[in-house]
Image 1 (cartoon, rainbow, N blue to C red):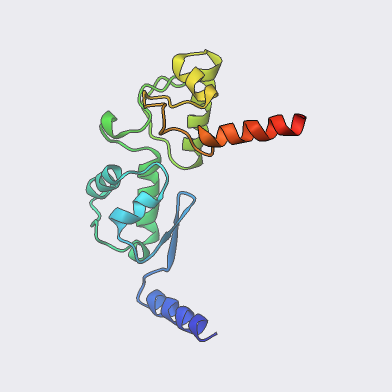
Image 2 (image 1 turned 90 degrees about the vertical axis):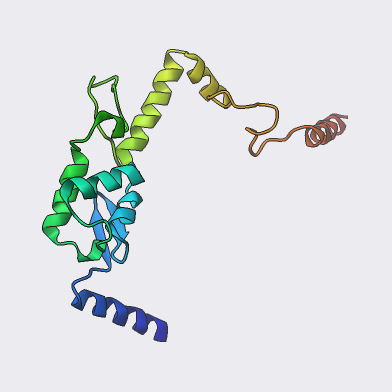
Length: 169
């Protein structure tokens, strides 16, 4: 009970200083005590490099606390991330198959796009698609031991086979 009182008291003092406890940006909650540079990386699809580029392009200090940003600055950052004017090598979706353009995808759209790409590879039965559907490593990794997760192999498999054979008898 006493801890709750201390935490609410701490939030009230930070809000009085002009620092918000949590800032909502692009459907992501970011703690207000984080710096802008590290806080932006909490948003899915934003790397450290892109976060640095946002700070540099918008001329906002990297070390400034997210909670100390004004509503106008938060809106500027959100608008820039939605439509970044950066070199193409910094974007995560170059040569997009559907649109034919270069764009940057963030948040839930990133998961959906990745899922659709894998489905497309499976549908056209490319090598990568076949590896995905078989549950095998896609990028040339070893298959002898490392890719197995939650699968029985070797001795455990033999024990299961013996149990199955005994149950049939």
